[in-house]
Image (cartoon, rainbow, N blue to C red; front, side, top):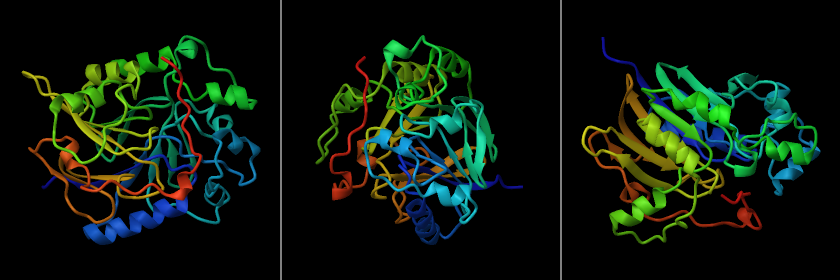
Length: 309
């Protein structure tokens, strides 16, 4: 009996744009000629249950609050969506569910850190970003904008929880692993696009990736598409990393993987269905779309929050 074939789609920071993501999945299914089995989102989903929730202002942007329609049952997500937390979420709703919860039909919060089996794949995850001065502190119940902000930082026990997991097919993090931009610089590959700043990312996530050695890592937060591989020296397995743009444009905000059983056989960006990578090929900046997506006015004034290392 042949192994099950899966189409798994990663989506960058949604920031409340659920309707758009669903339309994108319709287009990708048409292009690939098959159904999307499930989606994963890399944080900053902003699944607020009320459109007028004042806490959304903590995100410093006028993003839609479309999740309210899924929460009250007027709309239903067509395909399962599994997401981790970023640093802009409805942390009050998520606080009592560190091990995850289904927030609406087909919308699953994975939790703060752990391992989940999804359709036969081993999916590891770590929510949040690194803030050194909060790393050893307990998480307070988010009852104000200030306490909600600190809920978006991962803590030592959560990192320890995932340090020991192994045999991971897909690892979801919000903030990039530190050093992957320098890795790309060292490869000195021809590219028409400027590289991001070398300091992007955090060392804790990088240490986790180097320890766990997942087959694929998906991340968001910095609103840029990026592709790089780690490992491969000696008998060390290769980890392929895909960083996703925010869900304003699909070209680098959507990244799909097709599996045969647990083996990834091909992958691609955006909605065209065009294959950018096949099993056995290298994974680096040359696998990004040839032309970076245009920056549009929707991003005007939009800034991510970064803690100093």
